[in-house]
Length: 147
Image 1 (cartoon, rainbow, N blue to C red):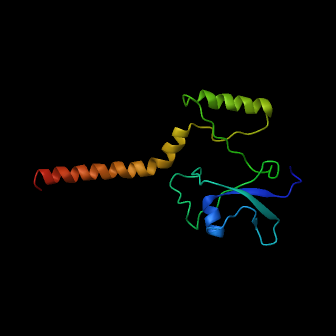
Image 2: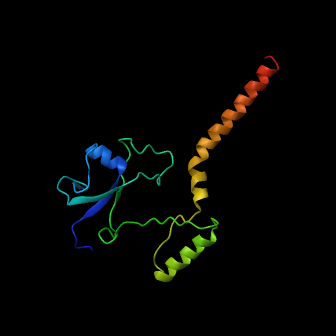
Image 3: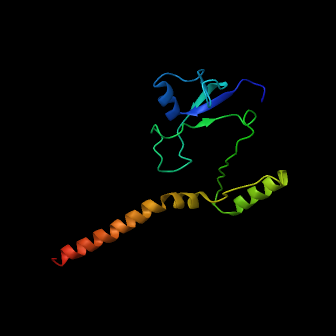
């Protein structure tokens, strides 16, 4: 409920960073400034790599993941991950149709198969690996012919 005291679930990295080995459930933190409204932690979830596959979640420079009930934070965007049996784009189109039927003014962004998102995030690493393979093959050929 929107009138209930603010609560949140945090990820394991945030719990370790803020409270070490102590149990964070029941503790409070403030969002924004020290005078902000206190939010009580009601649970801890495993770390999830949903921003970027290469993010080091234990790094101090990475923002902790905090999950709020939708009823208490309705101004935030929603991300939906949809798993289909065959991984087809047809399910994404069905999702778009369902959202448009529910609220025609509701925008939907970045609808894409997971494989495309992974391919985009790993493209730099794959390019570097391919380049390294080409140069190492060239070095092997040069060594093989005795140069």
